[in-house]
Amino acid sequence: MADTTAAAEPLLRLENLDVYYGAIHALRGVSVTVAPGEIVTLIGANGAGKSTLLRAASGLVRARSGRVVFAGQDVTRLGASGIVGRGLVHCPEGRRIFANMTVRENLELGAYLRRDRDEIARDMEHALTLSRACASGSGRAREPFPAANSRCSPWDGPC
Ligand SMILES: Nc1ncnc2c1ncn2[C@@H]1O[C@H](COP(=O)(O)OP(=O)(O)OP(=O)(O)O)[C@@H](O)[C@H]1O
Ligand SMILES: [Mg+2]
Image 1 (cartoon, rainbow, N blue to C red):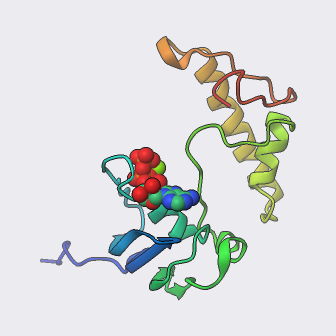
Image 2: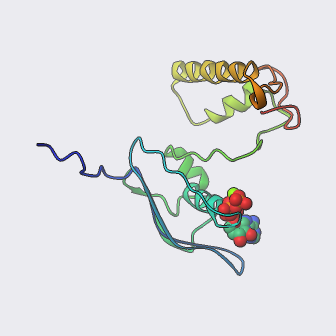
């Protein structure tokens, strides 16, 4: 019988990361692996270091020690722009979008490094379909959602 428990090579490997903000030692030797297709959730108290771990993975903060390995490549020292170019993307919580740009422009910016025009158009339509579904949902989800060509004010809705 085939061994179905054999672990696939992780897609993302965070190894023994230490991150400081000045004198604050925010991460102490944290390691996490994510297999292809796996969803990993970080749960912890406020200030535990969840966002810092994600920032270290995407290069928004630099780990003082440890390694970030993505798709078999060490990306620890690439910096955020190099890492996003490899396909490791950080979607920040909250409404951290470009408020003076339209919804469509914000989405297009998300595809800045992509060249697959047809796929981009398909993904754009998918995102706009989700936003329309969100706008017509029930309860908390039914917040006003700006149309694709309207400006994306973070105070107007779930943009
Ligand atoms: N820009 C910063 N400058 C200094 N210290 C910071 C900074 N950002 C986070 N910290 C500190 O690093 C530690 C980890 O914070 P982090 O934001 O990663 O926690 P978190 O688990 O994401 O918290 P929350 O649940 O509130 O989002 C905390 O002690 C926090 O005060
Ligand atoms: Mg956080």
